[in-house]
Image (cartoon, rainbow, N blue to C red):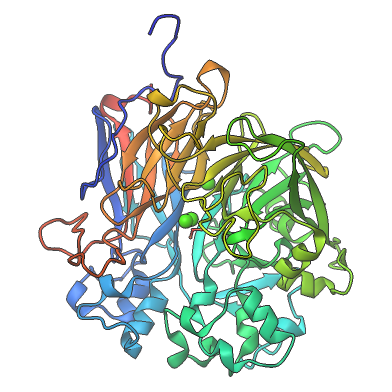
Length: 596
Ligand code: FEO
Ligand code: CA
Ligand code: CA
Ligand code: CA
């Protein structure tokens, strides 16, 4: 390429072309390893996986189903040891149980499914000679399932809205479910977003009392949505019996892996929504230096983007005092919701504008809280955050998924995955930041934020879809030289500052994948596919370091099409085996750095 220095550092690999293979495809010169699969033992004493004879007790000690987010947190004082922290978002019963009949779940199956949810903390040893990660089944490991105790923090804690017959104090919630993406904090904890928890509750229509019924509806609770049917076996998932149990899910969860006995937290000061993830940025300099800003999105069509500015600054180091301080960062501060504007009409090329953060809720160090929304108490804003944001004049977005600041530049990137309802009957039409009606392919929003302040500017880095189509944009880069990307879901950054994006639901009729995207200079918008996942799977949880790429392969073999023979994936075990959601590590042969 005359006059060009070639791909940026971190992006020098052979692209993987779109395909529909039942395999995890990686560039030439790279190696891969399945680190852990659904059913592999995690805690000491857990049995080996036995698909034909699975039990709730076995599952509670084994790796759960449908891994989504993954993070690596260094074990303090032990070089080359990490906590691999992984979400287990949901269960796909037809792939877990032979002969499963929809709506005829047995109690045994329900209890296995409950134990297959939540979060796994797994110690891994990083190999010096290559990029592989070896699971260590030991005392550091944890499985936090749908029945593990969590402590609720912030204005919801103890309020009437979250009291139940089993927890009249409203402070101890059993379980975390529907954990989608997440983030790692600089103080060494894992954050995780509780997302589609409405699919776990029965009898929404039996609740007619107001305002409870309207609140349930605003959060998508409906009888048909009760895919998991747990309420048949555990009354807390029956809204007719325990309407407040629903208010105890939908939070950002924080897990401290360094203390295996610690009770994980649910932070209501960050609001209750269908959180996709939470990622923090620490203001590096100026008067606000040390301020922690947390970004989070609400993944549903026409929902909002939020941030939380902590009033408590970060403490450096691993001392007990620093840890105590840092574990309070996400329960003291101000929650905001975003609106986006532009002087220009909707366009896919060079869309840009300004924006404003609107205050919803402030929590002081002593726990006293102020609502910034007329007619709502602080506890109501914390629990029914969507209703507060409706009143604040926020902008309805195309399904805000993962949102994360680039550590190299401080710019914040949000995957707006798709929104096929935009511009249809009675729904909002295209606007500057969501420029296409019936948006099937999604876009990547780039925000230049005054992190601790209330204003920002923004533009669209990518308007995804077929590069040959007129309604797509790849940051201004030559569209004949990019990998097609569709339905961005998770974002991450490599050590060179490039953006990496994993996809879910590729509308271009090929398998989902992982892409690297150049952000700066003449190659801005260059998009290269690094890997694809097996049939039916989405790619998630990406971690990109010098030495390895780690991805979660979620729901391989899942397909709604009744005419497709099941299972239509046998990955990773091959032959006629059931597919198993798994975490995979990829590294460059010969100990090279990724993309170099
Ligand atoms: Fe669970 Fe928003 O993807
Ligand atoms: Ca997701
Ligand atoms: Ca991410
Ligand atoms: Ca998704």
